[in-house]
Amino acid sequence: MLHKIFITGATGFIGREVVTLLRDRGHAVTALIRAGSESKLPAGVRAIAGDPLDGASLKAALGDCDTWIQLIGTPRPTPAKAAEFRAVDRRSVMASLEALPGSSIGHYIYLSVAQPAPIMQAYVDVREECETRLRRTGLPVTFLRPWYVLGPGRRWPSPLIPFYRVAEFIPGLREKALRLGFVDLSQMARALVHAVENPPQPGKPRILGVPEIRKASL
Image 1 (cartoon, rainbow, N blue to C red):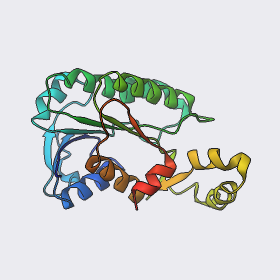
Image 2 (tube, rainbow, N blue to C red):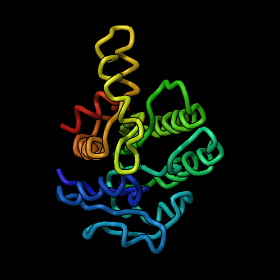
Image 3 (tube, rainbow, N blue to C red):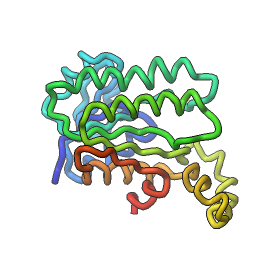
Image 4 (cartoon, rainbow, N blue to C red):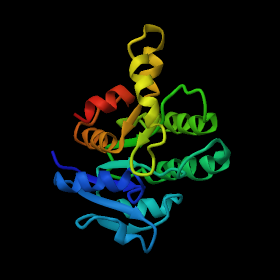
């Protein structure tokens, strides 16, 4: 079944990969972007300039889209960016909640983060709060919870991969090693497309942690 996708964060690290895959699979993709960013999108993706932190702007752009992919987030998050997490990451979800009533959205996909986590607590707290608010909408929702997504310019943790692989076979470390493991950009994008094409049933949010993201990308 083909879908009409509304996506925020389409010109970002993960977004550009996702919209290309969705377009190639025949889905109709509408991307909310900053004015002047049209050239960052692949051909065949509809661009609408707007403000992802403003509910009215989002509502005006939604049209008859049936699936929302929320990828807005502070670039390269660090513990020092706690204020930005609330001003941007949190606010973008709250704005989307303002836009949903009366729309055609029947499935909301949110890029969250692995929980619990030993660091980046302000970041995790914001994502956890946003998940809670989205659950209350009653919509079918999918939460993807990666820990770190490897890709161009984001490969510094790669030397840790062998240690993770060993830890995955140690009973006392296995769960944590899997939950806080790495996925690459291609896996993340394919898992998001899988989520679009396999929406959950209403009533119980679907959570894709690192093992599920890897599986969904196959």
